[in-house]
Amino acid sequence: MNSHPATTPICGWILPNNLDNSLAIYDNQGKALGSINQLAQWQAALGENTVITVDKIDDHLQKLINYIIKQGGKIFV
Figure 1 (cartoon, rainbow, N blue to C red):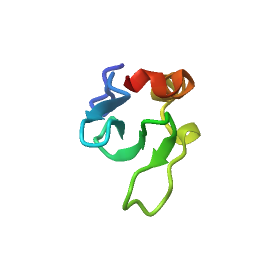
Figure 2: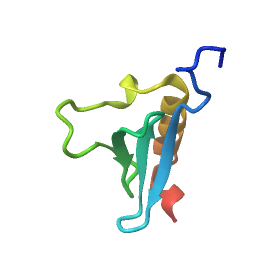
Figure 3: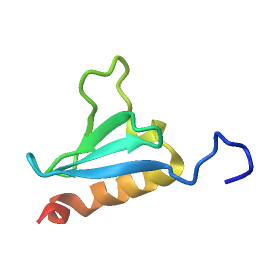
Figure 4: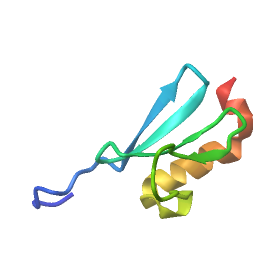
């Protein structure tokens, strides 16, 4: 965070999707990046022209996503 108005301490958003028991992942601007399904697998966001892989995401959010994936499906129990 600095004094520039375009900076933000938010690296992204993780929202539970109770319809299919997944986690929806968004960047700090609210753009859908993808989701983590019940099997703890990354799925790129639907309807996007470019497929976003986990390694293309903000470092801090990427670490959290990778941690969740390493936990396997038990995180959704």
